[in-house]
Length: 340
Ligand code: PBG
Image (cartoon, rainbow, N blue to C red; front, top):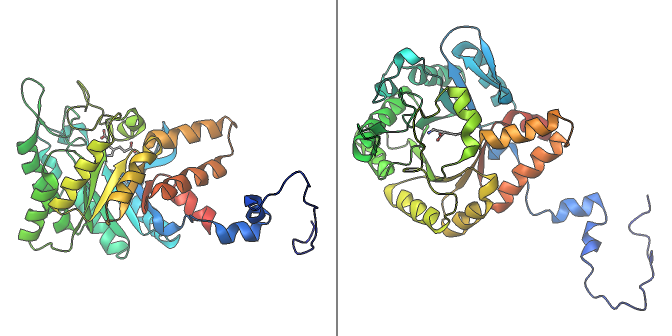
């Protein structure tokens, strides 16, 4: 290794008269660190976690190696550990037994439901970790859609919002720090904000899935929750992957309705949307590095085709560079360990 201070080290070619040599700033690791524009830290990470009924069990999700459905007792232990690693927030997703599902997702607002019990237990065991609860009907409906379905198969907007409101209020009552509507019904952020305020939960934040696309990248998540739609698809409520201006429209509405943080989902194929949303709003912007993005990296890594750690860090850094302030990622724990 030659000292970078030893000059002159190369003579300029007489054929070139370069004023700017961008490579100067890339010469050493120290310099590169100094001019680095984006830094991924553990503070950026939110860890999505799956909870199921039962005791002392964890089940690996086949299409998401390294991700588990935990029973509540094991989940609490895991959460204590991830909080120790510096992760500040978990996003909770429940696996609801078939016997508790119905057409309207009524289990979603049961005060003794799995989510509500789990939130209370987390806030007791690890009070300082932020608990974010998902507001959407799909884990709770027999048909797997995020809303109430009419006999013709249409997803009904306003009746669904009424259920989402009850769900959000029951999560707040259980102690959720933040509710995250991921359903894409129109007007749900405003209705939830109004109801939370009316019940005295003025400080419960809303993390809005504002630009949520109808994406094939959700496949492994639906395996995890056993929540794939039994008919049709989600294209009448989730956005078309081809649209960007519409994302700004959705973000505008959610901000007007009272969102505290807006989210773009998925992340990797939507970096342009993250960037546009970031330039548009003063609110923090979250990105969801979804299950299919996780699965692709894991699969390639298991085959020895990519350097897993480097690809994970590069991928999450690209999301941050695009403008994400927060990243929901199944890699959160691994990354927290890497960044230590
Ligand atoms: C459901 C929901 C989905 C995800 C988060 N909340 C799936 C869907 O909309 O069908 C996907 C998350 C992931 O793929 O990691 N409202």
